[in-house]
Image (tube, rainbow, N blue to C red):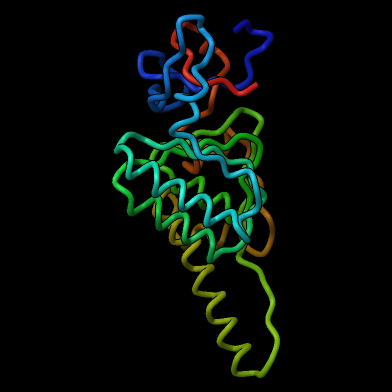
Length: 219
C-alpha cells in the first residue's frame, strides 16, 4: 500500500513502532505475497468494540474473547471506538480479559469514553491513535421506588464507581484518591499524548511503519 492509502498501521514482530517509552508493538498477522493484508488471518485475533457497552454488545465481546482464548494463547487485539455504556457490562468484559490465559491488547481508534475508557486502560499493552481521545467521568445513573431500595441502588453505584477508580489506579501511576480528585464531577478529556503521559496508554500508533512487514491496515 502507498502512503496515500495508509490509515493507521499496526506493526508485526520485526517492525518497531516509534513510541515514547515502548518501542515494540504487539504481534499482528502477516501479509500475503502481494503485500496485501491476508484478511482472514488479519481478522482472526481482532475483536471490535464499536458499539455502546449494553444490550448484546458485552455478550458478543465476551463470547469472542472466550472463543479466541480457547483456540490459542496468542494475544488478542481489542480495537475500541466506543462512547461508553453500562458499568456492570463493562465489568464483564474486564473480568474476562483478566481471566483468560492469553493477553488482550487494546487499541483506541477514535474515542474511548466512560466505561470504554476503563476497558481500554485494562489491556495488557495499550495503544492509541494520534488524534483519538479518552474521556473519563464518575459513574452515573438514576433510581426510583421505595427509599430503602433507592439507598441500596445508590450504594451499588458508589461501589461500581470505586471499582472504576480502582482499575484506573491499578493500571496507571496515580492512586485511587488522586484519580477521584482529578475527575471530580466533570468529564475529563485526554489527548493521545496526555493519555500516554498519565499512563492510561503505553504508546501512540504511527503511520511511519510502511514496510514489507505491515501486519494490519485501517483504511
